[in-house]
Image (cartoon, rainbow over the protein chains, first blue to last red):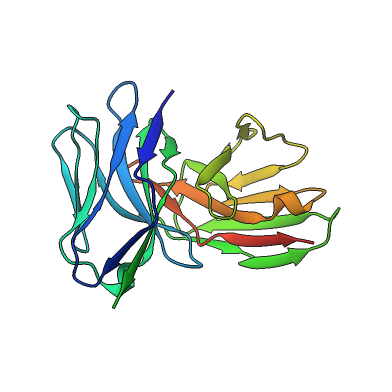
Length: 110
Length: 115
């Protein structure tokens, strides 16, 4: 079945540092890929998505590229802020069904 | 995208009681979903709710414990029945987008504590 694996966390960075959160997936067919973010005490917000190979999703300075050859969708941001502190979930969609990774807790210190 | 609200936002309940969670979407959607997020964990799909048909439950979840209603295209409820402390979790509702059915939009969640 479909599965998503995220890098083990938590991740702690200083403000303005470069961020990478790794995500790899296993799926049949050609899934859409997503990053969701969950701020403390809130629900999930869609951060970005990509629907086919080599697509790059981007939003709020975050980027991720759909790499079919490496089955990866790593999340990157060039300069993180304290306000980026949250839990980040990688997910894939096989039709209408979402499969989530374990989540990565990011803490950004001033 | 769809804007989703949930009620209540949080509750503290006694063992053996039931709680019904409401989910309202600001537009008509085909599919609505209910998830459970246990403390510090990822999301687990409980069931998929389509209007006009019975909900489809995932392995490990049963209708007697988590009855779901979907009376129209903008509303759904999840009931957590005969609660125990193990049911303490965040319960999240989501819906597919009207423009893109492979994308789900989430409500703010209901934080449930069972004593």
